[in-house]
Length: 481
Image 1 (cartoon, rainbow, N blue to C red):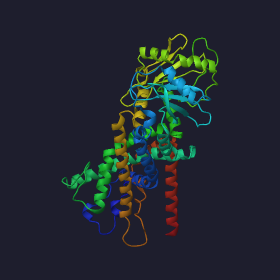
Image 2: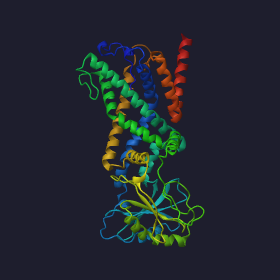
Image 3: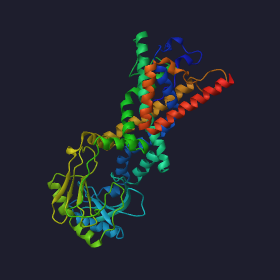
Image 4: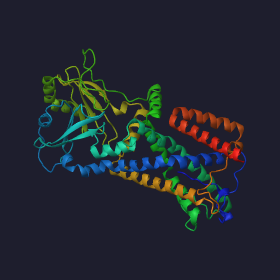
């Protein structure tokens, strides 16, 4: 929420009655205003790209239901044939690829998704054959991505949002945006609340915190929309920043290390059968590991056991939308895991010995640590899946409002430009903000900045860059003077 304003530097001709008084001594406001200004001007372009692509990604699950309807839905009615027959029909479409998992249709009108490992695809990508469960007829195949099994359109938007299709170097843009989003949001809230309190002391009838004074005009009206809209979405921005950092490269590694140290990690399902030695065969569709080369005879036997395994999982409460991991060898159990779906707030999983039909391990969402539960739920919410279309529309609305806040921030900067002289843009807030803070507060702010900058490296490095550039500009001005 960039609020590039400094009332004392407003252009000539602005009514003095609307100007805020000079900040009191020992105030944090000048420092936060200066930080908010530079972050808004320099980081907002990255935020704008992330916001637009994120808004598109939010509604992608709904869009792919329309774009890929011929793959995802069937008009045929009647009882479903055994899942093993559906998988066999899909294997006939891709006979040279090993089948690794299947997502059976969970409701009438849906298709079954049979997943294959394809060595020509990228990391976390699999090939899916869609099968009509009523007659086991294939309806086509597509490349799917990740644990959510995203289809090509959503995958393309996801990678645009994540790294601009530039690979790992492109991830720096999204991490930089997520690193600064919460700082800009909190800074904007502080500045707007301070402005509201000052206005309320002077004229309570015109003070606005969450609404806009419709009698205002020009820059004050733009500022009113900017601040009020920012207040409405501040909590959502902080949530998106926090959850986005869990996917980032550098801050994400620190988050993972912290979760491990505090035992907040998600429990894993043990797929190894009793008596097995060495690494377990099979495929984990979410960890990106290379599966072992399957034995065709063993794979055929395991496919034939699918319906029995699904029945055992259902008896143990793992039902509805599930993905069954098909082991490539005899030393690994089948895994049946509930997938992320709208209005589904748990993800239970069981491991089943395909030979005996016994459950060898259970992973209940109810037994997860609280932090692991909150992490799973928040990521599902961030992806627009937790509350279905309502979730997606809320994220889209949040993105649209944030775009307007960013654009109005730049308008405020433009409207602060001098009406005379050669300067084409508004001045930044005055320097010397540290002198307005109590020395104890200076030490506390500096220590906090170092700690946060270490935990969120791109935030720390970019903040250091801001300080160096600012110092260089100030030195050049002194030399010219």
